[in-house]
Length: 386
Ligand SMILES: Nc1ncnc2c1ncn2[C@@H]1O[C@H](COP(=O)(O)OP(=O)(O)O)[C@@H](O)[C@H]1O
Ligand SMILES: [Mg+2]
Image (tube, rainbow, N blue to C red; front, top):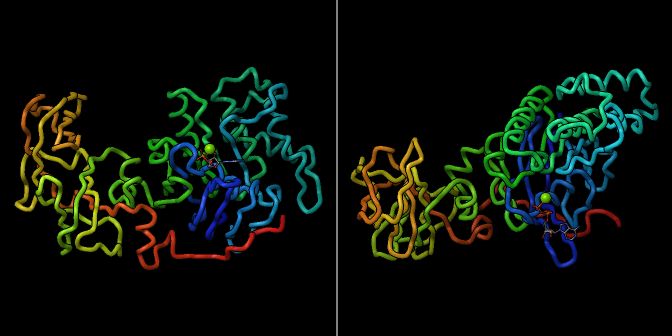
């Protein structure tokens, strides 16, 4: 099993900074996802790990081996793309065997029977046994995806890299294949990097999620941590739902107290360990819909008053949309709640559930001494000879 360490990576294309200041360590056997909107740099980062791009600067280690300038075929990574890139007129067997036929171990080619054994094993792993003689164009989308996975796995890679592997599948197949990837990862425990723009996919399969925006990894943490302690406004907004209220810090004493435009005070927790809030600083007070309640449970709860603009009954909850001054807010209440459009509503949010975030995004995180994502600075010179 292989640990992947990325150190101060930067990759540009002309004037476009595709990814920058990436510092993270993916543990052995871990399944990590790169999650973020289209164009945020996920594929670029994955291709840096695979070796298809050389970084402008920074380093990549597989365990203690510096692979920054090692070509892709010498990194022993298995890769699987969105569009499979299978050979349509070759059989399943030949598609999977192809990589092995080219591969040599210590200068030796694989024997025919060694190839056969490996191909049949991996086809059984992805549950495609019996279909080895089919041609690719005779397979469903889900089956093609299984073949693409088998082809990535047959070389017994140290690292498995998957770039939006399920995005060509319909919703039902996507769920099924997601479970398959989890199962296969569990069986093989290969260090895996999985790219997706789908937050549900990322949260459901990952040990840890790297949330990216504009080329930066803004947070790298387990799904629950990302949801409960987002480190930037972008992360809080991208993962799950959130209402944001502008505030100005009044005091910091365990909880942060911020004055909001209606002249009320909101108290909340800080989610960034070690961030130096200052009195007078502009912040965002962020609240998840499920953090707002009709009843006060503690005298310290924040009270939010608004006017209901719409309610939606969704079975297990009543979603309530309401306005607080200019802000549109949302709450997720008990399905039996008798709240209707036009009502003035008083809701209560415990201090520990309100999140107070600085507005500076990544720049704010850099103010945290020793921050794990931004503390490391590396050489700014070219990483590899052209
Ligand atoms: N080969 C390339 N040449 C020029 N620009 C590129 C190239 N690849 C990616 N980019 C740019 O880099 C940024 C990140 O792209 P990419 O890594 O593909 O994002 P994602 O996979 O998150 O959608 C985008 O602005 C994209 O247009
Ligand atoms: Mg991409």
